[in-house]
Length: 436
Image 1 (cartoon, one colour):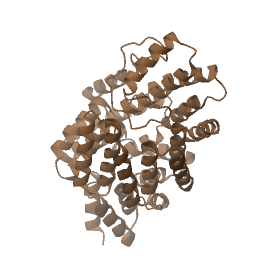
Image 2 (cartoon, rainbow, N blue to C red):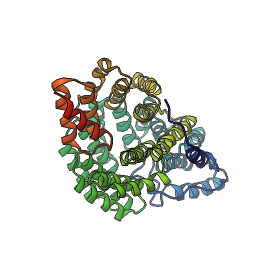
Image 3 (cartoon, helix red, strand yellow):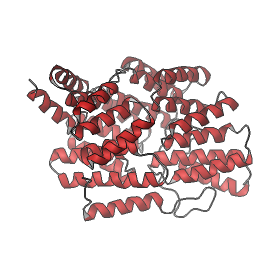
Image 4 (cartoon, rainbow, N blue to C red):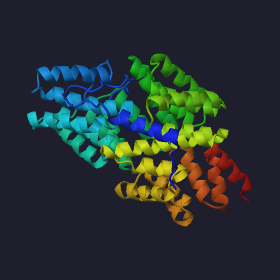
């Protein structure tokens, strides 16, 4: 059953919906309430670089420029890409229709040879989880400009998200040869990690951090290193890396979330809750909402936990209304904290579109939560086949399996990261104690 929203949660959900839809700036038009507070953008957004001002100031400057020069196809392409980045850094999917309009206008003005608009459209498709469309447009952009950083980056992302890991590795190495830099290095690191090569992933990110100079770049890469350390249960290193990221960019929400997870791993539940409350107050995305809810639940505050889970449902509804495929988000959140039947439907729909370790894990876990372990086992085994060291994947396989296989994978999960989830880690320890 889906969580019922209390009166206070319903008010918060309405506020969230209004924040995500009200006063949105039309592409090239006059704003309503103006853009939301600035956030530190990822080191290199897919598409054209937006300068050091961040996506919000870039959007304002581009809007002013395009009012004066409405036939500047390059300006429209950059504006569309800036809207995509705004949506991602602000957790605001209402920007995606604006991005589509701006990119469409750019292609109307310059239908041929417009690699910037094609790269921006690829980034938009990826952000909406249309990974086949993202791959198609990235390839079209690269046919025009083989050195397009945005298209090279999005091509890697799309191949990863379609489960085409060998092709993604080849694309990452090709991109590194053509446009070496932080955007490509961070993706190359993730390709290594997906194959279970944590040492290789760390080495690549360390290279990227040494090359970073802009505060946003330093924060982005240091956070990636922090999260890599957290996934391996090295909470001290994770905390150090995330603190470095916050020194470089104090308003980096990703770094703040990373610090919260590291603090929780070290037993500082109060500090973790403070950090995550700050994160979700600004960017109420499913991952941190669920993490905060689980911390409340583990602390014995189910009402506060339900409020966070209710806001996940609000975000999912708003994202879906703005063209985002949210089946994976739905499956992950609802399997443990919502409507299990809805989680299973969403997981099956996502698996029908793409066979990745993440979609396999989501489907296996949704089947398990529906009491269908025999069917689930196939998918949780698929999810662990590449060697990707995510403790939640290992835990899910252990929870679904029986006997020696259960003991093996539960133990692996707890060795990998003994605090991967406030609730899941405790359940893994219980199951391990009770397994003969």
